[in-house]
Length: 333
Ligand SMILES: Nc1ncnc2c1ncn2[C@@H]1O[C@H](COP(=O)(O)OP(=O)(O)OP(=O)(O)O)[C@@H](O)[C@H]1O
Ligand SMILES: [Mg+2]
Image (tube, rainbow, N blue to C red; front, top):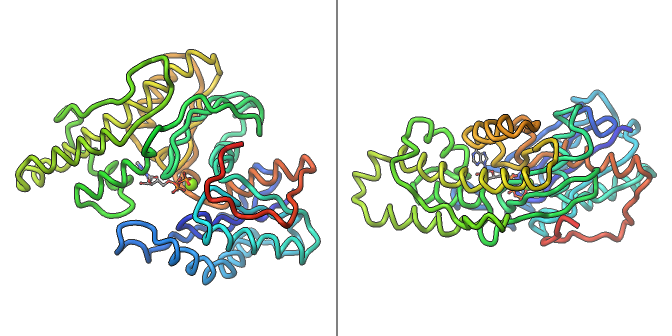
């Protein structure tokens, strides 16, 4: 089944064509630059940018896939979670396309989209696996027992991991979004330079917490002379990253042991982090479980993962009524 997916939940305008929920024929992603000067996403500007870009980006996605609207057998768009004004653009447009062409429509949960990114990248993924979803808005350990059957084992009780990376990047005077910049800088730094706190060490709980770590970095920067901070920027970035990655890895290892699942699938924007990938690979090798993560362009927001998730539901005959609304705080079922 040929599905066109649209993703406009935050600051990426994206359209993609995916075949059978597994093969990406095109995945056009426009990251909005308008927010950079504000150091964070401005919701009203995001919505306006999506309106300006959505039609040419959809046309580009069709063109690159070598398809026309007549070839599309189903439409999918994110309905939540995300910014309501941003979500409404892609969601409304997908409804219009489905209505106009008489083809089916499915409204995709953005978090399920992130889980589906691994389906596009790994043929061998199987039905049962543990997902560590680490993004700008979420940090969750999810037991997957067949697509659509999820049990949330743990989640962040405060900031999301990506949010922590972005806030620390801001404290260190790096650009926005700062996760990738911290990753790059940390490669030249000493991860043992400062021992920042690892929160919630209690192995009985699979939850995460990152706001204390963020505050620890902020206090460290406040209490040391600017020249020293400047000289050791890479060491501080590496030390922060090590603490964040350790917290994620510890709980993931416990969850893998507890659930006996055969594989770990990492997803979301922070899944692009090189240190996190390397440490999880070590853990999975040691435990004898498979480890997979999507290529970086499928980690951060993109429409291919939305089309993939939508395609699976559409191929099962599931349809979303046209009166579905955008839901900013939508949970993963
Ligand atoms: N290499 C990296 N290392 C660490 N963090 C990274 C890296 N690359 C991207 N990120 C982070 O990923 C986040 C963006 O991911 P994503 O697009 O999945 O989040 P989101 O869509 O904003 O949130 P959500 O999906 O929860 O609604 C940002 O916080 C960014 O800093
Ligand atoms: Mg996302």
